[in-house]
Image 1: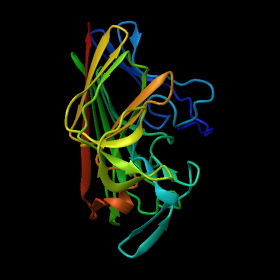
Image 2 (image 1 turned 90 degrees about the horizontal axis):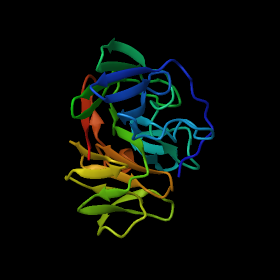
Image 3 (image 1 turned 30 degrees about the vertical axis):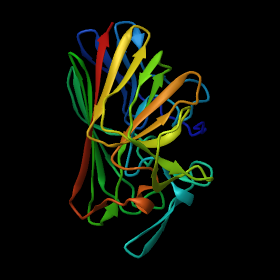
Length: 270
């Protein structure tokens, strides 16, 4: 699905730790979590040759998540044309590549911020913030976006590349139909058998087993994208709305308003 060649800033990484849990954060690489590990067991696909900015780690998707069809949407009578960063579409927002500022850093917690652009990449501005915390029983991720002087539609979420699980426990209630252009539409259909590159309605925990580690994913998001077509990885992505959100289910933020979400990864050795 994703294999771009955008260069990635290899800025210094830092580790957040609690007990034998650690999260490696790369603020210069789109503010992403480059690795989550328990003991000697890594759970995330780290950067590798050819991965590009979109193909590794766990990165924030802000101020939109997934594809925007043809990089185009209309908001309050204004036609917005975004750069087409994935084939004919715009994908995953503008936060996954630029460096994020580290506002706070402690042993087990970090807070990061990114001023969103006011140019062709995203003409509305705003600010995105992250909080990453390693706890005794897992990792807590929080993400928000706040509108500045200009209103805009927003969808946020996370894109983790998990090492290929030995088992997946996922019980969505419905799926957004995907059309011939590989983009979700505003129509719910029954869940078909995998493999998937699709968005689902899901309100239940998602379970993964990776080697000898059980991971349970929960979020206040009810839209989850699952991409499991790669042999080495499975992506499980909680989002505040479906792909192409500005077109099919816009969530407008007025000036000063914030959209926030959380994503918990409970981690336990078997």
